[in-house]
Image (cartoon, rainbow, N blue to C red; front, side, top):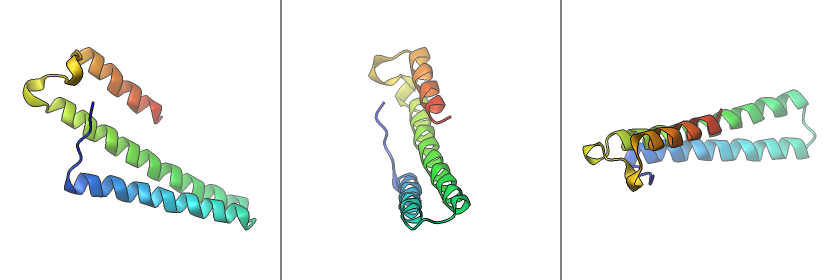
Length: 95
């Protein structure tokens, strides 16, 4: 399944990923500076949430595109059940 992002969707996902990238850089710097463990974990949790949200946005876009595909035809010749199984696997990979 090929994802096609447009305008606001693309901007939103990229912003979330950039936010996570910045937070991860912050975590690395905090560890190098010997910062308080609680502060490091808090920042790491924020980065994790940002990545999760970006992943869910990507999967939601894929699901929307799959459901609105021309005449409901699954991509790559897959059956509806095969597509459902692939999407479920993607969602669970973020759990």
